[in-house]
Length: 374
Image 1 (cartoon, rainbow, N blue to C red):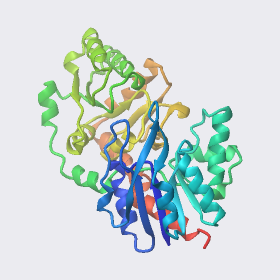
Image 2: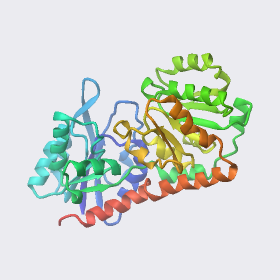
Image 3: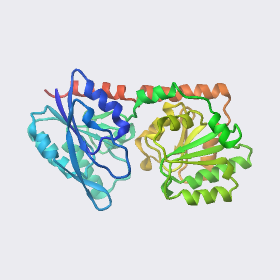
Image 4: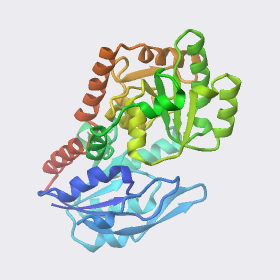
């Protein structure tokens, strides 16, 4: 079966699943993607794939919204493909044409998509549902959008939850080589429990809440350290806030890095990875290194990966915007015994091993295409 994959971009973090697709003995994937992106996302060089189908030129509207991929129509129609996988973004107008053309020719179309977030209303909701119905099948990142689409009347038989993943094998190799936590102890001068945040330092991440929660925990005797791995426009204000709260010696503004060994080491030795605004693939990154995730419980404003957080097992969910609730969600992870911490580590590993890894995604893709109309 020959399948044309047209993606908005090929993020570096998805290299694991793309390489498994490329090596699959029963399915032949031609992978095409935009050659540039906005937002500073690191991209994979898909020219190294046997199924490299070419780069596309992404056309962005003012504000950074992708609306067209130059070359996509020509590439899609150039060969007699058996099926198509398209990015599930309804704003990409070239994908509408490809999907319509393919369906008219009896070719199945699969949208790899977030589905619904839950806050769509009016014309936005109608447009999204039209796009989804145009496709033959949805490959969804999470179970929550599956339920939301069911509630809107979308057929269960035309949806499959495929989850999401990082480069799992690479991270397992890093995990096996993690050294001791001496570099953390040397920086802070103590062995207090560590909290970690990984991502851009922006106002929407609500890291001001995390500093306030940390101060409140300290007043109640639950002292801890914090490392912020990333940079961004909120850094100056956060540094001032840390000083005002008397936390300067407890907060490490590490800065931006893409070094997986450094990030993995921080995560491995943390009591929890805390993302007060929202969380996406950072949740999977943290769980892969055995560390629970603390984030808010409002699914309408979350990435689908927050579903990996099972309260009390692989993390905690707190009331969005509530600093007291955030502090209480963090507290139990600071108080674990060594035996409890190891049990938590194994529970976190199990979440990723079960669903959020490229091998599991590849199994799902095989089952989907095995059931595809011939």
